[in-house]
Length: 194
Ligand code: 5GP
Image 1 (cartoon, rainbow, N blue to C red):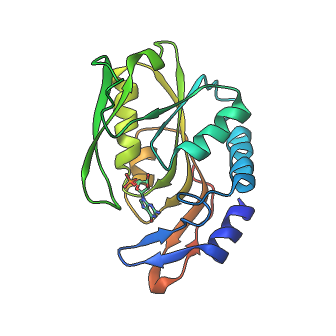
Image 2 (cartoon, protein in one colour):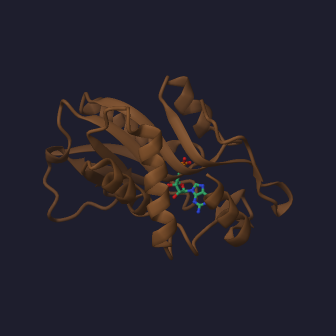
C-alpha cells in the first residue's frame, strides 16, 4: 500500500533491536484518514473471504481492526491483556510473549463474543515473531471457528511470524512488508505475501 509505505518512509524511525517506531501515526498518535484507507484496503483484500467477525488484541490492533470492521460491516472484538473485573470466567485465553515489551501477557476474550459459526479475520498492527497472531489463532482453535485470514498493517518479513502464518496454510496479507531494517534504513519487500 503506497500511501502507507510513503508514510513509513517519512515518519518511521528505526530503533535498536530491529524495532520500527511508528507512534506518530499508527500506535500512539493515530492518523484517522490513513487508518480509514487501511480499513478500505483490508476490505479489498478480504471482502470475498466470508468474514463474520474481526479479532485483534489491545491496544495497537484496535484502530486498524475497527476501520476494517467498519468497511467489512462486521463486529470487532479485541482480546484484553489485563483481566478486567467485568470479565467473567467464561473466557478463551492464550499466553503471548510481547516482542517490544519482553513480557508474557495472557490475552483473553469473553466466550460470548465468538460464535461457533464465525469466520474470523485476525488483524494486528505488526507481525514480527508472530506471537500475538499465534495467540489469537489459539483462541480461534479453542473456539473451534474458521479463520478467514490474517491481515497486518506492517510485517517485518525478516522475522519468524510471516513464515509461521504461511506454514499453517493461512491467507496472510500485509499492507507494508519490510525486508530489512539494516543500517537504520527501511527496505520494503514486495507486499504480495502469498
Ligand atoms: P509478534 O507477536 O509478531 O512478535 O509482535 C507483534 C506485536 O509486537 C505487535 O502487536 C506490536 O505491538 C509489537 N511489535 C513488534 N515489532 C514491532 C516493531 O518493530 N515496532 C512496533 N512499534 N511494534 C512492534
